[in-house]
Length: 554
Image (cartoon, rainbow, N blue to C red; front, side, top):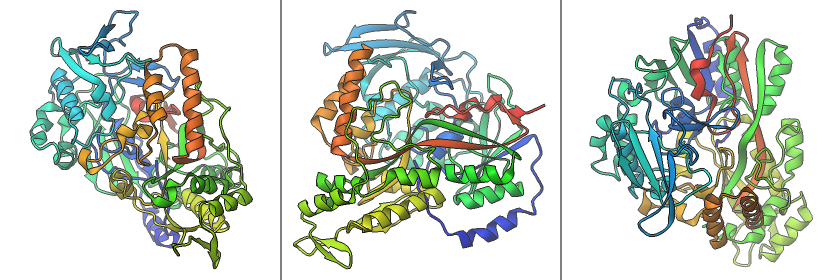
């Protein structure tokens, strides 16, 4: 998820410059978002801005729709055990696995006319399997130990375990072998050589309703209809995704006509949207969508200060999350006690919770050896100052406000917080991905329904130099029981038994506190009255996956 920070004064001039522009024509849609992608490669780096853009230019094999139902997008038929396209089997090592057969749509072609084929499937798998390719979801490719190619459009994926989501292959982002295979001769350097970043406007990289035709780094991305797209003809001749990192400036650009809409997934904060709706009195459609969006603080557990669980407990006892939610978000963003949202069926309320309790926080810090106060800040017996860096993406006013509250409340218990925010491309492209943050990193995760957090909590998924920073366990959390639970949940097909495992996972998470939970977010979509067909999903498969349904209201 993202960060917030930005100077208001510097933005005012930029906003004025936009007010003289004519409003875009109705065959063009200009979308405002707050971040620019760190890469356009579908499988490298976890960044919402990239997913938002690529979802208009590509289609996953499977996805969850707005009703949270798994559906085929690039495949012809969703494989199930019942229809015979998924068959349980023993692996060569004697494990319980499964073979799942997918057929790619016969009319699916890359934008340069090359058929989307099993060659692309095998190449994508080859890249994902390599330990130094830098791919984020390494477990998907590790578990998928073999692919049998039936023909140019049909393949069977063999997994080394039978999971409850055996047919969901949402994260398998196809890479065009005919364009990118030549760039994979050096797997370690591949993430810097991929055609997605060196030749981003190449039509052959895309097979969705739109293709990227222009990129101005840090500013905007232009997309135009893809002539090889097989589905409903998109309504807009041109979609421009304009990046305006500061949310106040983003609102000003909407009012000036420089953008037509603000993306709910990556736009105004909830408090800004509520205030905006009151001021504009029905001039725009404002849609609020609660979902599986988890705002939190990752803690770098390699930091000796944060290794001490008493310090982690003091940090969470030292902040009034309920008051922050009420005062900044009108209570619309409920306090989170773990990473599992109450909207998800696996949620449990029976876990440790941490109330705002400065007295308890002070006691814990004293027990942890931070006993001496000088000018309000604690020191240990070695004379070391209790100082932690707090980071997030620059430009998000709401996160900036949360940071300031956290800084103030933690100072009250003797912790010196240094705010060091960065542009989103740097924050997600390097600082978080390569675990360069030394203290706390504030951002959010979008997840799918009943999403097993293996990549973020399993000890085998800690990014480091030797694996070219693959994996998403950015905290460096290591817990043997958690590892076992993550592996057990995936292969437990019985829902009541799985629910018990999920409860224990949430209990460990809330007890060990590798992360400080903040809120479950609601995303506000600021839409023009004339736009129809956009339906928020509330999970990681974003509204742009159905962009061909967006149209001008008659």
